[in-house]
Image (cartoon, rainbow, N blue to C red; front, side):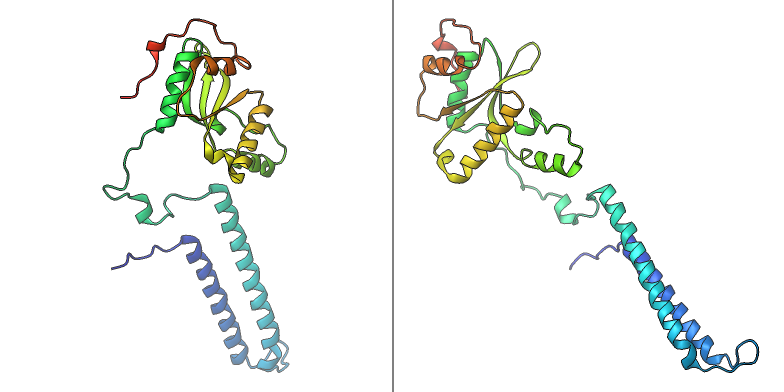
Length: 242
């Protein structure tokens, strides 16, 4: 059996006003019929007053309705979408609706181990970071312009972020590009990410995904943009997934 739909208080108010206007119109019409004479003894018929009454009622109806719609619309814009207004089925997850998933793919875990080996003594490595958590649009007099710029980055993530160990300031971003990055739509996404990072003054390094990596080659590639201590590589320190 379907659940009973909850009434909208705003809609109830609008319908109440409509009823009041309708009753007022009917009352004025009946008054015009029952009135036999106007003040001063001048006779008048129902036809002589029905026109102004209809115009007045329609005008009042439209005015009140438009005002109420405007008030409701303005309040909803201020409050934003309400969680309580969502269907109950969307708010309550049934048992077994979710399951855990690995944070990193096997290719990403492999590269993460190489990164730890190469830069682990110089930087802290954070994987899968939301782009909007490390860059944001500059202050814009136009709220819509700011929101549009934010919407372009809020749903995107970068593969690895290197941070200074003492301040956690972002030192650079590393993107691991597999074959999917050769697609046209991924190219557009990559250009947007690179542009946002460059605008924010953050350096980004793109590494082509491979079956295996040479730690020395990765350190050479990263050292072109980031200061990395030229210490001997400890091959036994490589990260090994459990």
